[in-house]
View 1 (cartoon, one colour):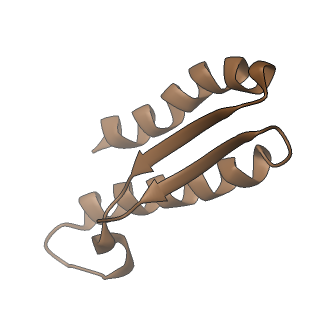
View 2 (cartoon, rainbow, N blue to C red; view 1 turned 120 degrees about the horizontal axis):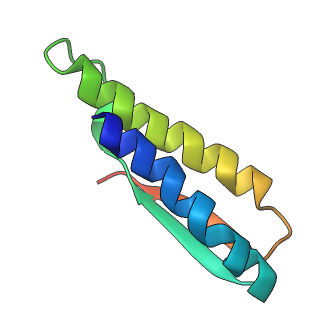
View 3 (cartoon, rainbow, N blue to C red; view 1 turned 90 degrees about the horizontal axis):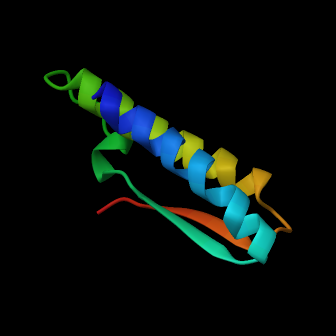
Length: 75
């Protein structure tokens, strides 16, 4: 699940500078509803999906006023 967290951070890090320069862009991450419910049998998966939500929420705040938004979908 390390790759889930690393790609969640790496892709926006690589792509948002160009979006900010254009003044428009969308970052959409995929998490899971499981992040809100503890499940003892898959703690690593839950931790990874919780990290996706936390990072994307923080990214949205960091991008405020740039024309770029960051959202997370938790099906």
